[in-house]
Structures are given as structure tokens and as C-alpha cells.
Length: 310
Image (tube, rainbow, N blue to C red; front, side):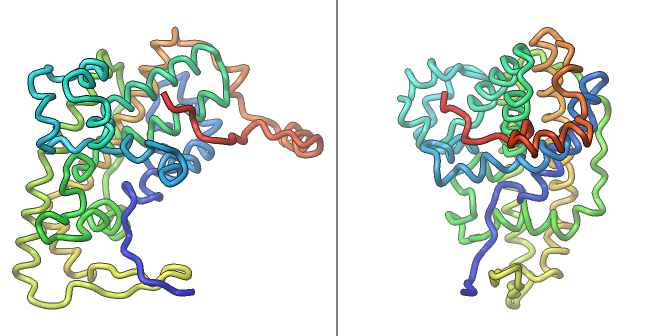
């Protein structure tokens, strides 16, 4: 049955896939060669974390931090990058999970990737890298850092999907998203909190730009578009063009920063694991090996089930 829907997913699935793919291409050698052998898998599974939101308890809060929530004022005296245990002691663990744990999830996922690299476990590496890529990409989205995540508190409902899905779909093809060769992240916790702070600084500007464009529009902003079996209510292209222009390159800048951030985290995790030689586990498989695996019912590229909850 055809239904009405408003898009609202983190960065949009195509963007998440692009970020993981581009991050793989941005890695320094020799890690780049090994990870490129699995680039299709890393791109295809970049959205696994989103797909777990309705099936895994406490998955959703891993994707955001409502930094402007009054209940999180308890973090203000804990320094720039408080550890989870100290934050839970100050605010209560239930409060943290109620308003998001994204900065700590970055550390948990990073540690999981370091352990996977250290063990040279191919499947564990792929699973941890794909998920870390997803959470790091979410940290670069301004509306993942605020209680007003969809403009619902300022009568700007639907802005979430416009910013991270509609605009990338319309204009992403023209963005310059290549990043320089990435480097080592000295302090992952400080890096994560810094990224969230930069994202949060964009919240009011993106909302103000939407108010400005909408106030001058004076007509219906929406159009119905058929996508598969779903009829979606979207902002009209001309309105999106004006809003995109008013943002001054914000979406492109955050998208490019996300690619650089994901690649930097993967590379840093590999170095923290001792820069292991992954030739034996990440080498491309021959057509003969793939055929043999199918014949005996073995699929070394398949990963089942969600990641364990820390």
C-alpha cells in the first residue's frame, strides 16, 4: 500500500555508504590496499547501525548527544572530554542514555576496532570499522547534537531530513569531497568531543537560514515524490536551492570532514594495534576461492548479528 512519509535518516543511506567508501580510498598505504579489498562490504554495511535502532536496546542513543539539554548541564564542570564513568557519576547513567552517548560510543567503537586489528580477525575488523565509520559520520551532523533535532521545538519540523538527506541528494554530485592523506589522532576522546562541538556550532545558523528562506518564500514549500512504493513529502527543489545557498557550503564541509574523520580513526586504530600486517586476512579472494566457498556453504564475507553492547 502506498503511504505518505517524510525522510529522516542519519546522513541518508547513500551518504553513509559514500563516506565509508571515500574514507577507505583516503587511507595511507599499506592499510589502504588491505581495506580496499573490502571496500564494497564497508560501503554496503555503513548503515548497519541505523538498521539496528528498532531491534537493539539502547542503539538509538549511540547516534546523538543532546548537548543543549538542561539535564546535561552536569557535564559542564567535567572538562572538555569527560570519561563515561565520571559523567555517569555526575549526571546518572540513565540521564546519559536518555540524551545520547555518541562521544563515548566513538571511544567504545574505536577500542573495538583496535582489538580487531590486534587479533587480525577479518570479520571483526570489518564489522568494527563499518560501525565506527557510521558513528563518526553522525558526529559531523549538527542536528545530532541538539534537543531540537528535527526543528520540532521551533516550528521547523522536517529540517533534519532536508539538511542531511534532501540537500545531499540534490547537490552532492557537485561537491568537492576529496580529502588529503590522513594522519594519526593523538587523543580520540578529545577529537570526538571537538567534532561534536563544531557540529553543534552549526545548529543555530542552519535553523536561522531555514527561517530566512521560509519567511521569504510565501508559498507551499512541499512537493509529493514517488520513491518505490512510498509517496514522500519533500521540500520543492527551488526552496532547497535557496536554502542550500543560504547555508554557504555547510553540508559539503561537514560531509568532507566526516570522510577525513573516519579515515583518520581507522588509520589511528591500526597504528594503536601495532600496525599489524593484514596481508594474510585482507587479501582479495580469487574467483576460484569464492566459487569454492559457495559450493561448501561458507561465506567469509558475511557477518551476522549485531555488535555486542558494551
